[in-house]
Amino acid sequence: MQISVLIPDNYTSYTVRGDESVVRYHYGTRIMSQTHGPSVDDYILEKNDVDAQYPFTSAEQPAHSSSFNFGFNVLRSRRVNGQVDPDSDFHPIAELARTDGDLIIAFLSGNGVLFSQALDDDWYQATVPIATSHSKQGGDRALKYRPLNAASPMGCVQQMQWCNSAYPRGSGCGPLASTYDAFVGAAPFFNLTSDEVHGVNSSRPFSTSKAGARLIWAALAVFNSPASSLDRVIATLGAKSLASQLQFDNGIQWPIPVDQWQDDNHNGVFLTSTSHYRRNQYVSKPAQPNMSDETKTNKPLTWLITGSSSGFGLSLTRLAQAKGHNVIATSRNPKRTPELVDEVTGRGGRWVQLDLDDLECGKTIDRLEAEGTHIDVLINTAAMSIAGPLESFTEAEARRQMDTNFFGPYRLIRAVTPHMRRRRSGMIVNFSSGAGLEAMNSLGVYGASKAALDDMTKVLHKELEPFNVRVLLVYLGTFNTAMASSVQAISAPLEPDYAGTQTERLFNMLHKGDFATPGDHLKASRAVYDVIMDEGVAKGLGNEIMMPLGRDLANTVKRSQDRLEHMMEVFGDICRNVNVDDEATASW
Image (tube, rainbow, N blue to C red):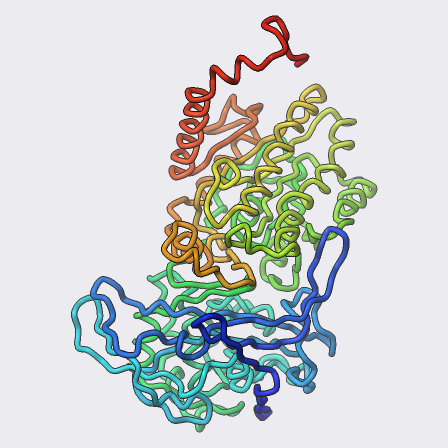
């Protein structure tokens, strides 16, 4: 299967905005899910041109830093049986799509890759000297090179091969169709076996791409792994990371110098994304807890959990199953996590496709109840976040967050409440955030969606209390889940006026995933479980309405308390003296 070279010229345009040159990459159309229905928009991604992408014409790497901090944007489009998967980020222009089988397209833009030596190959022509660097330990300085031309998204299209449905399983096709994919999180796309995912089979080709793609996708894989996994990754790849064409039967493999491999993987290139595939070197994937010694409950319940494919949703799914409960796990696209689906169903649970943005998602609960499956516990963990100044959001971006974070949970609550009320039992758990409790720059819309969820949950608690239906609002601080590395950025560029402000600083931290995640979500999940079951560390607390989790969240609560106290100190007298008369009181 040979690589079809795609020429990006017709799909790239340039403009000048002030003193800044901008390149526009034209991909095709994207389907935006909105409350009033889907809409189709042209997908045009704007990035600074090559001069802005590589700002260091001659610079030393700061001694305290081990990375140059260049950014990537990754967009994926998947085609199955000749049709674009509706869950893809966009529908590509026809000329950009392959026609020789099922495929996944991964575009990179805003490149910023620095090569350790000049690579005058067919793809990058990385021959322009750009910067010198030294390690934070004060090592020798080394000249870096960048590509001759701007790093077009089409560059990665040219460099990659895709899985072809005509290939027999196990023959090796597609980019990094190997144990490598386990680190990228793309294993489900390439039909990898569980042995291959866990690194047992090391004979499968690691890549069928040339040097540039090898470099970039190696970084994608490694930066999604804990630092302790770097040695394992390199050991797993072994000589194959430097293999020649003679060592492969499928496609072309060009060698990458050892110093480039070490430089890219250990010095670090921050990876950001406009989709849920954001990765960076500081996000670690917690180990799966050992549930084998869990004591089974003597009162098994039926749980429906949203967002079961990662984070709190996954940890609560595993914990509830280990305790002997009946679990209905849900996610937007179960096909992306077949190994998790197998794990849950293999333990007697169910996995149901559930898209919170779907106006009819509540019918999932209607169907379950109609078949005799009575839901005792509904847990809403699924959420998404887009960062940016409030003025810069499009209507679609704002509605998308409200759909997933507020309207989606509300649809499920609206569906399950009548059943719980009639049975005079049940529990609803909504996961919120400190951003909904206390305003945070660049998270205005996300915070608004969570604040709406907060108030709804508090009212729900009051309305359902007479019917013995419990409601819990969980406020989260910052935890070590994929959510920390999946904050998306607004589509519009940041306005220059925000340069140097707290808004810009937090925006950059958020959409790059470059911030600490001190919270242990496994410990927190166990605490939530104890509240639900009114046992363990939460014995006697089962009827509480609000639960804070995380030391940083404790600080957020204190700031919120201080702000309210300050408000009353300043305006208290005015507040108490604007009634009709001194005797007038409210009705509630």
